[in-house]
Image (tube, rainbow, N blue to C red; front, side):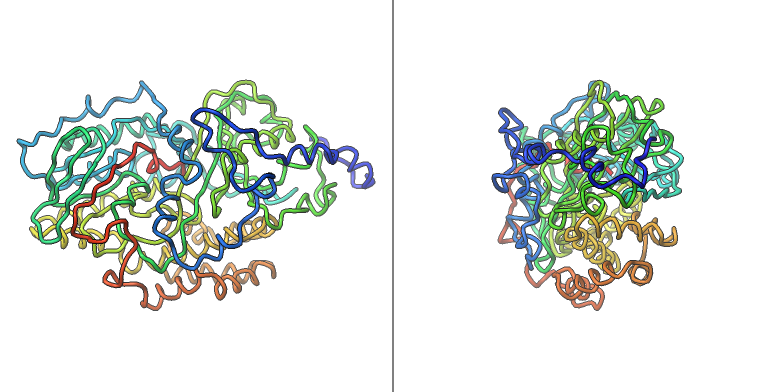
Length: 579
């Protein structure tokens, strides 16, 4: 890699690297309007790209969630059209559930559990319940897995799912500024969505799970009743002793949530599976690129990024000029075939409101051009949208949930699939025991919630929300400092944080270690965040045990938790989160 010598003058740097003013202005123009199904991803934050990239102060300062706002975010908000486009992808190589599982018959009588949703969370929970003798009916859209899943190899190995991986990298690579390379020292892997779905479907078939295709249009769950009634769009009527929503975050319309938590945010990512040239000249093709936060997506001529010298970036301060209010994003890449075939993704870790796909696509194109990576052929596009954070479900309700529908997505990272697969057996065992008690619908669902979201897990989640809210506010320079500090922590702590495995006490130790190792700016940001952001009091309430109880009101679309709830689930693959 050729580097510009340290003796180069500033004028030479500017002439060689910085785009002319007219080019910079052109690069910041709002994207052209789209037609057809992608029209909804036109940016709506103002006439210029700069206005579209800035964080609205009022979004960060919101003290309490708004019911409509949180549900709108769960359903894709302004990016809903592209979220649906992603969900509507097909894959003929994946077996249809209707062919693999027996059809549900009303003649079979009352089901013990109705699991709504056919993503990884729904399939895994349905299979684990049925293995324990629970009569399960699975309800949802007969659609394939369509998202790309990246996981830590050791976590999938622990789950006995190594056979579902189609690529593994010896290490994960990060860049937190020019010359700031960090090797994580942990193998990463890509899940073969066909193999994973085949594994989960086979588990359901072997355990005797029955299947009904379609939307759930109505749920009548009376607290004192012996069973809940579900009506499907195709006319099927199902009765079950417990209803478990596992159809992604959009299923939140059926559920009740806290009202004292910060509003939800979203992780968005635009990716391509592509045949490329030049990747191995810029990155190690034997390592997975976990995060490249270097600001290569603007201010540089084509193919000049590799020649930048740390400390001598021509665009003032490591190209950080004008980034105080810019929403950061990074390059995430999974190379195969020696770097000739690569999944490339521009990712916004978390933002309020969500960073639009149009911005992410433009950043990815500019970043690759600056790096000198040529896209020869795009084989697939992906639009990944993951609602994160926000209020947790309340226990005092008559419908249970699992996966993203139960807010099991890590607020600060977007990781969900491994956690759902890991927790499915334990929750299934608890539910099997709960169902043996023959309690009314309300008590059964509440017991399920208490098993899934214990007070300890709620404390952990509040800590993760606190971290997410901090990341929503940090500018790019501080984000780089934060993550450089994060990976300096002992592996037990940063690995445990990413996997949602640290106890509430261990998370406090994690925070203290971060304070010790972090530069002064991050220390100050953490303290200010604790006392000045709504996530601070929310965290403290959870830790001292004064959080909202189920009888103190809740966020829900229904005014009566015992009344029939009528709405439709959507085929959006919200529970098929990427990471």
